[in-house]
Length: 529
Image (tube, rainbow, N blue to C red; front, side, top):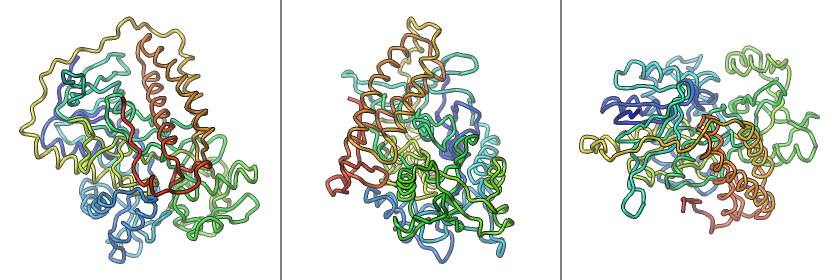
């Protein structure tokens, strides 16, 4: 079946939903999401949104903090307009019903948190469930709009492209989408296609991301011929709860912002050896420090100690973290929290311009799937939700200017052709390859890298990709197979990008190239040949 819509938005996080709310005023909107509509990386965001809302803060300080954290690769013009456009975007969220935590002393002002790399308190939050609160409000707003249809349990397979006589991609016409429940592949034709698919944390064995974070948008865009940038910069969150029964539960950076101190298992502090901001250092510094100390001691984790704050404060400020830790027998009011790094955020992605446009016409991207130039070599904490809001608005501005003059393409789109594909009778191939890729990436392309490790990873992933491609075309597509194909593509892009950057900068640390070099003060761009 072919569905026709003005806007095809792939993904239902803050980027996709905030754009859908605005786009609905222009035309019809279809949101494709591969699980329930609220399942997204946004929903798991604990920290908040960094924005200058306090009179003692300034745009200049927020810009400077972002540039310092970004390791010389931030696009200064992008940092400038994202930071300065933050207040109206936050105001918009409040108008849509988002309830940020306010100050106990002054209910008219926000309770601002502080996180690693920030020189001031500027992080708006809803206790420690900011993402969930944002998703709640945006979904309620979307539900009130007649022009928006959400297709849950639908996963995009590939983008539909129009090519010229030489076979070069002219523009994007939409996407082929699998209805997971009905096991039917539909064609979605759209004037504009927007990727807001989130990140790719599941490429790694240990991650703070939900199971849906398989890099679908980056993989589809790459296969379509779009430019991909800076995939070597993978942010490992320093403090993931370390417990055998906990599935990579994130301990927000805000815990350190409220005084949490990193310690070794013997109680000794160590961050003073690595950075002047100690436990409040930027994430790349903290993650590398913990990784170094763990390898040195042989321990599996370090401790995050906030027992010096009183119980009432902790229960009020971090209700979600407090209750989750208690489930595992950890009372954070009296027990230090065992933590270890986990793959958390990709600073690279589909390369876009100042208005979210990719290198393919009528294809846009916003949120974690994109690379805007804001984060550079390392994302400043809580700048990601902000980036998603600013860029979804900028995409709307760009499209609004040409919407009335743009017609829905009449180019014939062939229905999905399964060829001779049959039902798979050997799903263990998917399971084994999935596990092998994630272990390979964790062991060889983690926080600290080397040429030997990267080359070993490249050889393994090339072999796996060949096997998966053969399997993909022989058997009917399933959600698991689509995701496996995508994480393999993303893993290959990460390794390729790492090998191209022959230096250490920000989140990319190669022991064979320990210096930061001026010649590599540029983006790593990869494009399908």
